[in-house]
Length: 516
Image (cartoon, rainbow, N blue to C red; front, side, top):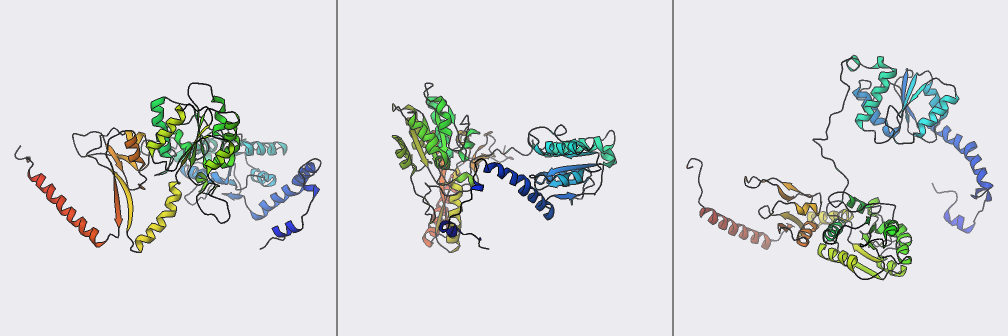
């Protein structure tokens, strides 16, 4: 349905209504309109559409109130206590706030009517809904007891066990007769969830497989091993994962694009230069003015690394001014380096392939050791691997299905060469780089192993080469739809290799168990 007032109409016939200006005295009239008209209309809409839901019996000594997002956890805890079945049918009345603002006073008070106690399950603090509900009950002179924080912890996540313990404590206190005998028995063990911490490993957030930001922080970590640790400020975005193992880089975070601005306090305060990290999205959002402009104005002697992955990658891969894509409705392909020059930065280094760890490391080392006294900015550019795979995989699969010859790079580790010290993993952290146990009784330590999730970025080999680790990484090309000559050549190679292996095996002196 087209709007009654189009943009064209608004431009051709501008309308002005001083009642909508956000200045006194009109702003006071806005408040009256909100309270007298809009708020009651919102409550009426919530009731009319039944947006908030009730489950379980109409009456009961106790009841539970929860936001819609916590309902699944609440019903699961009731199931474990024997107070609900697998379909969600509960013996305890539930009031589910699918709309938490505004809270409909009449509906909540109606739910609480005749109940001895209600439990407000509200994650986070302060407990806004609980305080509001408490005020409602008090002003209406209700005797219903309100529980919430106290039975539940004041802060932190309401995990399955916390939810189970809280609801169990509430029901035992106010309605123990509703619990099944086996749960309520004096010597019955308290219901507990199985402890999976020893069987399921923790999964902290991290860079995607093949992420072009990983080699940046591997390079920075290697430089720190040479020249010592520096004060490093992170920023909002994927690159904030660098503060976690294996890199453990970055000591603070202020806001989107504010890495260099927040690091200004450390500028010139010691023998080592402060380092700031910000992404290309943060750079265009706030960094150019608040961070880079601040560095130039204050003649900062610090280093800023701009992680340029072509998109606002952390929020879904939207285009930004420096994106390389051809966008028909937006202005893209605006280089970050040009913006830096326009802001007054003189020392700029552009790296077009972050996977070149040797170059990346040398550039960071140069920025930290140069005699130049002023802002130093490194623009480290490589496309977000997640977006790249989203774009390239469908095209590659279509070409393979069409019979075209396609080469796909894959990396591996020669287990006979790998020393098993795992330095490559400590400097990479790629999810596809893991460990593999060998059947060799003389080698106790597992070797490095690259699994099938590898996307062929080559970072592991680059890190091993730059850090002078074992030369066990190799690159292989998986050829789809090879030609006749390639198939013939593979056959010849296989026969030659088999012959050489058989000849070597024939010259070995071996013993059987019976002979020993």
